[in-house]
Length: 294
Length: 294
Image 1 (tube, chains in turn green, purple):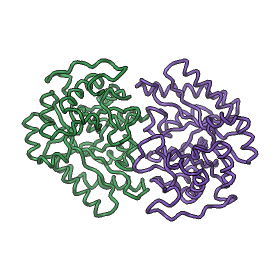
Image 2: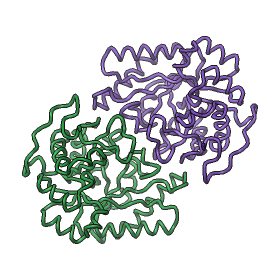
Image 3: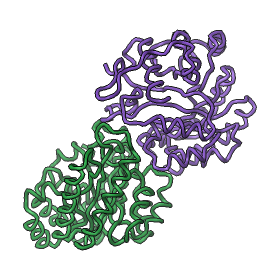
């Protein structure tokens, strides 16, 4: 499996950096990269590998309990780089929209309990049966406006995530960094930021300019590679850094030059990767991060 | 199969417009929509259905012969809305780049022989093994500049086609209409235009503005629907109008308001559709065009 070795034609793997290596100071493991680990296992895995931050998902958080997870993260000395995720605002009717808003209020409270740097929002696609893209985009803006006061009161920063345009119909009608910024800029930067995820935005000819524009609006920087050919299940199509075509270093430098000082979160949905033992996934993550991102 | 009937939850199918129906005056059948027809069959199929224009592909053109095809199209009284396609400029080395340029010169000559309204250019993805997206984009611009004099001499208009960003790595590093216009505007409008294909650009939040900016640079308008979920083979993931989520009418009106007066070409790559008899594909195309695009 290519996750253990250098992909063909690429440089040889580097030795795994030891815990405490200063090169790992900004690295975060998004929990979904080790999909089959419990939250407790993921926390322990980060500690063993010397990864100082973690991105937590809500489903395992609910299983393990918010307070218990918060305590465990604190005890382990980890930062929570993000809580994933709120959003899915584009409901087909008023009742389900209100449910979505209520659920996002709970997500904000959970992010506050965890001390998460941001709550990632995947805003939702077209409502089933709808072709009204502009309407869906308006309803996202309305939902964010509705949530901002609650987020402000809780001290939580919302992070709007533009998803790759191939997910526009079914996951997120927010499709470019420019569009995410147009929405975020309606609110104070402390309340609403944006996510820059290399997988979603690497192709954008306007990216350098928009990263510069984003500046300290960047609430989260995620890395993940684009594979060729694209795997057939688009939701699990993401690759380990080095396995695909993204040139990470210039993107990391651009985000840093824009003023981003937060963690660099590795978030990879890939069934082949997930099938590996968690510590192997983490080891590969650490090596590839140093080799391809730093 | 949904290609024969209205998709579930959608309006009932309309009666098939008869040949001569003025609603078909701007319709063009891209030959690849009836993938298994020969060029002669496609021409006859258009005549039977009352479709006044056709988009021709180079592979069948070479099989049938350029002059013979040109003669047959003229005899049938059809317009050639496009020749598909030149491009693939992003070669990994100098020799293959020169081959690509030479092949594009031949494509320009073929477009001239056919009297095609434009030569569609799919510019190519990243060269194999490369992560240099900016470099690939520069090499596309260089190739277009190199071809423009030949196109001008032949009286052929080059049409830069931005492809959906999900094809950026392996088919076309031209990913948005804005980016295509940035390149096209370096040259006279009569020599270099752009393609607006609904499948590739429907998601773009900047689309209305860019269509307005494009104006008479629009050399070709293609329609094709976006299916949900996205079929697993991305190269055959396109849907018949009405089977997906694109709202065609506002896009058609925007393109017309920008000054486009050419044909509306139906170009669909879909294995289920291709499996149907050609006349059934054409009948569905005509009905869905009137119902969803006009």
